[in-house]
Length: 639
Image (tube, rainbow, N blue to C red; front, top):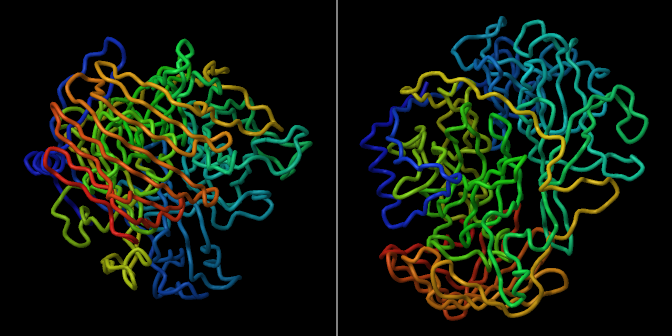
């Protein structure tokens, strides 16, 4: 087992070195809530969980008894072989989506270990009765017990009752037995599809759901769904109730299934409820409201069920942060505030901490976002492209960070769980990048996370970055890690509050109606005033319902009264496809006062073309940000 202990001195030195030149803003706390000093670093021990053997190839029979003497399967070596789910209720197992290969042909009993499956892995060093530290939950389920299910097996997570597992848009049900029990056999297991009705007459396959998450009450789910209004990629978050339907009369698949009912879109389409909107009392003024709910991609729930976590509209220009909104009141809380990209996360059992996967420390996003306190006006056009810079296809830049409830403040930017010397193959090797989603144990003393090793085409070949060799068994490019927070005592999960029947700041989803257009300010020229001083002149040019160009001129603009912004910035966006965009960006911004900073493009501008899902960086011209003497430049094309 690979092990590592972080020391107080090493972690503080690492964090301070990375962040010394970046002025971090404090995450706003709840009204009247005192923000304490940042917590001291903790001792952390990281170990690796055992996985099934690696198949020598994906050919039939390659997973022989010589490779796996127990005949319980082999997994593929490639980059997306595994995806972590969550801990079971007892805290001694995690669920994993895993791709098997090389199984022998039927009728060999080992033939069932083939393709993408849901697996339980022991986290306490023990084994299942057969001698393995893992158990395949979906292998060998009879055909009659798995009707109408989809191939989506993402984010497997156990229900609070311990008898079911939700993965993708499917529910695994062991009846009256816990999923961890030896009595939960393939013959006793049923797989049921989850269907969200989007047709007025109830017909068809239903709507597409992604990033599905169970609410802690075990009755509701949150999910995201993509829309393509106006030729532009969009996404909304939803909350619905799961209801078992043993004999559906409409829609497909017409088999026993879970229907998602009482669905609420977590969105208010009123123009003055958008983060950037025209002041209703002054039609020549533009307002940014950081309290507006702007649920983009849904990321989960607080452990007490009161809040929904999501990636929302930026609070500072070019930032991609996490937010939480109270399901009942709609009150918004900013969870992270670092200039780098944050996305996958999980809240601790007592909701006093989060573990977030973040690119902080890599400088990947800093050329875009290092200048703080710039209002998110050009973000009306740039958010999708900015978020896509975080990855280079099969090279990710995420690492797991422990952050307290009060978030980034001062020089505090959390504690990296796997900090170390970065030696090849170690838990801190930067070529091993974290992938969604990190997961707390039920007692709050451990965090599980998964990693992938950078792979071609993001290295090797024409890519200037060489491909590292895997030191894992069979050359495997994935691994599952457990970080032990050794200074902590077990804690209890907070009392769960059921999801409300009605969310007043959302809107009812009506089957048969299309997703709404997000309202944008009308074309025109506006003034935006700084909270403390100065102003910005904003010109918006629209192309149909969407902005095409946003140009901003700042004059002594300041929200905090400590830093002052002057200069100009403009962005024009061209949609090459639903997910591929071109940004023509010109920036000449100067910040003075408590922070000395510049954000400048080359004379001909910065021109970025990127796809939201391919994430291949391709740009001409330059965009450079300098903060207190430290300069951040863009990645090289293709890296």
